[in-house]
Image 1 (tube, rainbow, N blue to C red):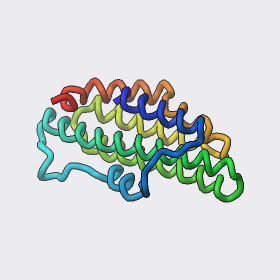
Image 2: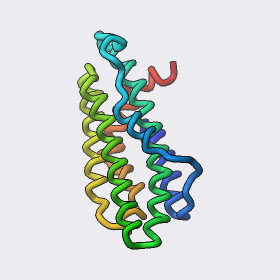
Image 3: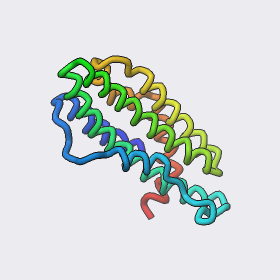
Length: 171
């Protein structure tokens, strides 16, 4: 998970540095779907290992979709911010909203997780994303938005998630 986030965030930061948006169409529906996706109650096993496997599968989806969305949105936002005015303010709001959706997706999975360590790590990472979003207050903040997600609290939570879920992601 940490490696996934770090790699995508590096790409996001690289794109932000150039102001070149990545290719892709509208991403709103995918972010919303990924953020709210959860295993159904009947499909998710009630045992700890089964529940963890199901939650980890959803986390992977939330993380991959969120990271891809963030990369595109941040690049687009940086480009819009260079023009100033209402477009720049809207770009900040878009990135903040996306981080909020990403955090909500993680919290949704945390509420389902039976593994206390995984639940705690998901909540910690969601809280860190919310703190990152709160630090985005003006268009200039978009230049360093990628680095907000590599903070120690995001990294530590990501490592715990990765340790818990790696066995399910490689099988």
